[in-house]
Length: 141
Length: 433
Image (tube, rainbow over all chains, first blue to last red; front, side, top):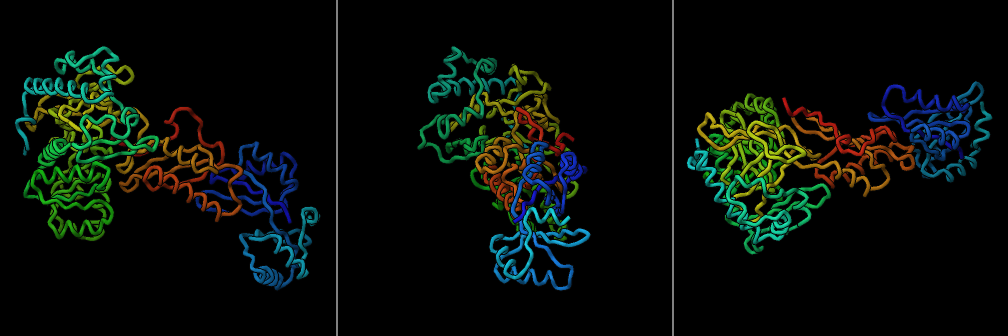
């Protein structure tokens, strides 16, 4: 299981800058991010170094921030890998809420929010997927 | 056309004499029938005999909406409940309604008041009048209905809702007059245009009220529908719609002074003001039996003129409203207090009680957006959950105020903090054009 930091982003010029500034000023690295946008607001989801600390810093800076559990899986850069992953997850009757990718110069990973993280991690491990934890996640870089 | 020339065109001296006679009688009545008034008068050392005419009116204590709420439901009624033939109620700040009761004679007085307004708008017993106010606890529907029957018109108790059906009936029944809120009439005009039936509509006049509107909007309605539009005013505490209405010269709304004695008092000091000075409108019920109110503060800001009107009426005229002295908003005809939103948010939990109401008028219909600050702990990383939360807030507010709202979530501490409620409202309707 990996900790994800989520920040509520108002649709206003400069909000993203303010959030990332808080992180950079405190030397917190962002490994991956995705922005879910609606007409009214956005949700910025990030995998960062020290998510709990980042949450506190952002809250102090006046943002709505929270930490949630997500599943991170290392993926081979090969045709059919994603299809196999989704097939495995759906076979266990778990639904995917959202996901986003992470790529480094060496490898790729996918971050998935599912309805049942424990089941997902179990079946993925049984099917030889490389499920990442916080530490191994950071080591990908 | 004038419905009751004797009363509507009475000389000032005769009117003053009539009002004085009725006031003396009414004060005596409430002193003996309503404990609240007896206590209030005694507290300032007044007895009925001290009030000899309207020149003594200023000595009497005021009545406020809070007094009605504090005496919920029937505490201010001046007759036994067996004589009350109907009650109406309107919403209040705390969710507790303000309740008013009518005797059979009150219903007649009310019908007479509305009949004068309808006649002033050039409508009468030859006309087919559609009532498109809501029927129910709100005084709009039934008040207009009884007045229209009183002049002998053919009344279509349409109520609100299915506008296409309304337009179809307007066509089929040969409707010549309509009574509804001005914003709803503009919506009806749009539907008439959409249906392409404008040349089959016989509508001549509209009597609109229950929400603030501008002279510009009135002219727009007249031009768009090719009709005459009149502004009717009233409030349930005093009677309901029909307390005042404007004539064909549209230079203020004639008040039926023989029933509702108007005063303008200065904001803050509550000292009586003279003609053309802007202050809070105050009414005293001269003839009401069920719940006669003495010096009821309407919170509506306006001025008054006792000059005879070009139409021939001498009935005093109040000018178009300049706003309100409290934080009540009238949105689509519904009374809304910002505190109702606050209470709804607090009761719901999971969000902060920090909110901002943005009232606007889009395509001639009032809109209400409520911005609510998000709580850091309850927001979700999933859009689905966020949408659920938005919907939950919207439902809670709708339950509290009876109006559909658009909810917008904003980041914590982005809304201005203030003790005053004015910071909770941005009204963009620009009603003073």
